Every structure is written in C-alpha cells, then in structure tokens.
Length: 136
Image 1: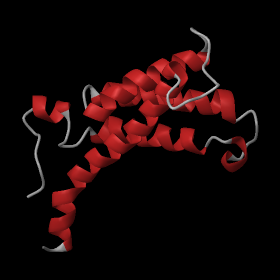
Image 2 (image 1 turned 90 degrees about the vertical axis):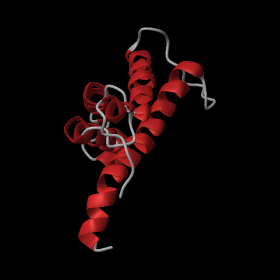
Image 3 (image 1 turned 45 degrees about the vertical axis):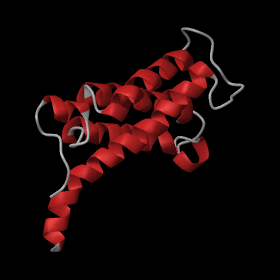
C-alpha cells in the first residue's frame, strides 16, 4: 500500500478517532462538574458559568462522541472553550503554560476543525447520510 493510498484510506477514520477521543475527554469534564465523577470537590452551583459550561460539555461532548449533529455541537463546544479561555485563563497570565489554558485552546481549535471537517465515517451523522464505513 503506497503512502498516498494509506493517507486516503485512513485519514477519514483518524478524523473519527480524533473526534471520539477529544469528545470523551470533554464529556468527562462535564460529568465531573455535574455528576461528581470522577470524584471532584469542585462541583459548581446550578446556573453559574461553571455549571453552564458543564452542561455544554456533557451534552455537546455526548453528541460528539457518537457523531450526532457534529457540526453544530462542535461549533458550540468551540465557542464555549474560547469563552472559557478569555474569561477564566487569560486574566491570570498572557502565556498559556502559566494560565492553565492550554487545554481550552486545544479544545477550541479541534472543535473548530470538526465544524469544517465533519465527523468522519464512524458517526451517526455518516450513517444517516449513507457515508459510514471502514477504510478500503
């Protein structure tokens, strides 16, 4: 299999893998904030910014894991992470390694990429559109 064939065959699948893994970690932040799992002593009060972020992480993360309504869910998740960076991290320091905003930046841009790239073949969206499948 040539490298061109390898890239053509596996790039869409790896897009799905990127979406699933990123969404699972994002979803875990929501379960931690709202459900206390994994165990955390930092559960925000209802209807605060942190709670709202947790709701978005839980719902958008769940949708992204299965690849349902991928583009709108990724758009909302990307915006949430951009807001989180500017509200919570940037005021602490200009530099991401010092302000703890590395993950927020990465989530923001991975989700923004998914808005344009779509969910990949391993998704409910692809099944609904008749494009689900495996590499050749």
